[in-house]
Image 1 (cartoon, one colour):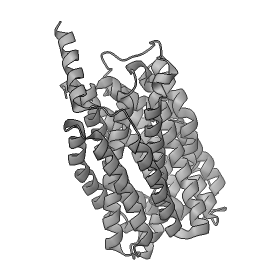
Image 2: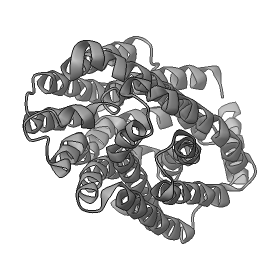
Image 3: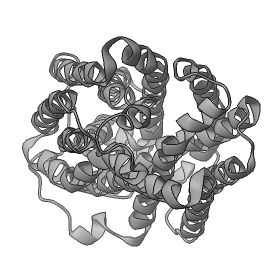
Image 4: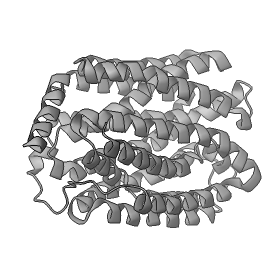
Length: 401
C-alpha cells in the first residue's frame, strides 16, 4: 500500500472502530439487563429490542450510500453519526424494553457503514482493498475485544444508561476524526452519473448480500444465547471477556494466512467457501457441546476465525464487482442486508430460544449457514490475483504516461 492509502486506511479503520465500539459495548450485557425492565420477561421481545437498530440500519443504508455518491462521503457520514448520538441519548433515558427498542432504532438510523466503506474503496486500489478491509477488521476486532472487557465493567459502575451515553460521546468523537484526520481521496467519484442499476444488483452481488445477511443473523442469534451459556459454565458476567478476548484475537490471527492465500494465490473461491463451512461447523458443534468453558472456547475460536475472514473478504469483493461511481449504492445495498441480518438475528434468536431453547438456535443457525454455502458455490465471478496485478499495472502505466 502507498503511504496515502495506508494513512487513509488507518484513520478510516479507527473511525469505524470508534463507531462500532459504541455499539459493541452493550452486547455482553444488553440481554441480561433487558430482563430486569418492564416487558423483559418475553425473550422474543428482548431479542427484538436487541436487534432493533439493525432494522432501521437496513432502511437507511441505501439512501445514505446513494447520497454519498451524490453529495460526498464526509457530509453524509457526519449526518449519520449525529443521528446515532441522538439515539444513544434516547436509549440512555429508557426505562422499559419498549423505549429501549425505540432508542436502539434511532441509533440505527445513523446508517453510515456503506458511506464509510465507499470512502475506503475510493481511497485504495483494487489489489490493496482487502488489506484495507482487513485493517478495518483488525480495528473492529480490537474494539470488540475492548468492549467485552469494558462493557461489563462499565455496566457495574454506570449501568446500561451510562454505556449508551458513552456511545453517544464516541459518535461525536468519530466526527472529529473524520474531518481532522481522514484525508480526502484524490479522485473520489462524487457527483458522477450513476451506472445502470443492473451493474450494482447482478446475481453474484446478491449472493454476497445474502452472505452478509446470514453472517450477521447467525452472529446476533449466537449472542442472544451465549451470555447465559457462559453463566451456566460458571463464568460471571464480569469474566466473560476472558473468553471473548483470546478467541477473538486468535481467530483474527488464524484468518490472515487464508486471506493472503485468497488474494495472492488465486484461491479466492476455495478460501471463501472454507470460511463459510467453518461457520456452519462451529454453530452445529455449539448445539451439542455441554456448557463447559473449554468446549465452548474451542468452537467459538472456529466461529471467530470464519467470521473475521468473511468480514474482510465480503466488502472487498462487493467493491470490486461494481464501477467506482456505483460503490456507494452497491455498498448501501450490501450494508442494508447486513443490518437486516442484525435485526433478524436478534428477533430470530429470541423467538427460537422461546420455543426450542439454545440448542434450537444453534441448529437453525447452522442450517442457514449451509444454505449460504450452497449459494456461494454457484457464484461465477471471483477476482483473481492476476486480474488485480494487471489492473494495478494498467493504472501505473496510465499515471506515467
